[in-house]
Image (cartoon, rainbow, N blue to C red; front, side, top):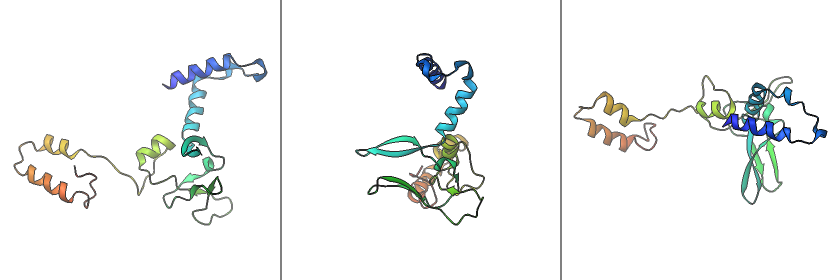
Length: 162
């Protein structure tokens, strides 16, 4: 898919008017993928009218690092603008941080290009049926264990029982 985007971009640039003055020899595939990665990991979903949303690069927000905490960025519907409030007081020269949301490391890695060592929102999906049945296929108490997990699983941190 990314290769398709690269070739599409090259074709568009080949058809661009001479006034664009762009040297196609300068657009290497490596540079294109770097630019795509930079754009994709910095995009934000923002309202664009009639309840619809679109992806956009938001100046300044893309310069802020992520820190777990309360989300302090929003769209003010009445004022029709994006807003960001500081999570805490920052000293001069200190990097400003905002919370990208309650995202596990998999989402942070896929959509933002990094993962946190101690992510309080980290999670892992585990298929207990597969684990239990493959490791203990003849367990006579398996039916009872499954009922306990179905009944108390959410309180124990399991989503949707098994």
